[in-house]
Length: 478
Ligand SMILES: Cc1ncc(COP(=O)(O)O)c(C=O)c1O
Image 1 (tube, helix red, strand yellow):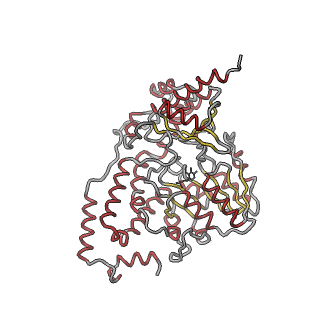
Image 2: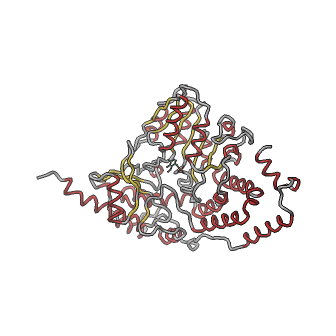
Image 3: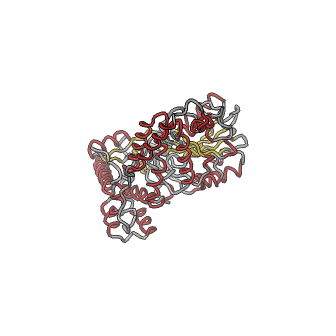
């Protein structure tokens, strides 16, 4: 019997002995109704009419109160995962409590329908078809399903990027060891001068043997957003049979780009994590696979009960926290209350503010018509343009703005990344993360919706002090 049919049959009256007596069933559903009638968690929103301009703390300061801030330090390392707003967290806890009360009755009767509701909500949110979306634990699992589930032949080629996420690189390296495929690594410019330069880095490596092109939409090391749509279009012109696989861990719900846009450009597979910028509880990822490719990819966990063309074959995960899936619609609600563009602008602004670059801040302010706003000017005057400091080496593109979002990485001459992160933490109470990568070295800074302009000004001041302190050491010895 097919697994999903089995699950459905348990809720049907004809299912046989395993069904609960009707009176218990009725009681269970009354209890559920009672839960549903308890007060719904809500989000704290600014009063109507307060503009959501990215520098406006009267708006974003209220949004930030939805999050419980870390205690004892200022968290500027929100790239690992996003904490959840309290409204989302309460929903998650309530859903967990419900499951903890209803136990296996919930799992045997309501689980699948809750997963399907979450699937529909997420697919609709990103403009995808529910039949092309599977839920996984995270991006790592989503992309491993495809990397390990592809029917490789010795000599098949893959194009990856030199700044792809470590777990994906390891997965491809394992595929090299296991199936003797060949990896061709594109050297992605750190500060690109044009889209064409990035497109060329990938397309120049495509041959008739290229089976897969793996693109990291937003590079976690630097926050660079690469032009996936344009790369995909060019790649498919060269070899239409290439499977284009996108790691959207950091781009989903961070940039305003919807996954539909990627799909429409020819992208075949996307993996992402909902616990990053969507602020869903930890442990939920998604895997999009275009319908025509579902059949050819083997699931990571053995599954012969779902049809080979059914996306659910990738969800054979055993017992798992369904309450985290049930929270997806709530996380989407919070995202929609802010709006993709406003959220992206706020996150981009926080990055520009701590870097302090006057040209970028002026262009950004002009573009949004807020340059002459007294608060915008005051914030600009409160920061030093770190780009003017000799020791300050930004590892992330600043302009045009659509080459990134919240994330940026900086190296300061005279400090190792670990020394810099440690100094910022110990002396200034600012938490960032040291990046030690063969290509990128520095501290990565990732503000969040819970961050304030004051946090970013504090980082700017700390880095200014560090750079100034360095001046005697960097001056030539007399
Ligand atoms: C670009 C990128 N891909 C994949 C991942 C892995 O995400 P997860 O740990 O949710 O699987 C990360 C994590 O930070 C990432 O930055």
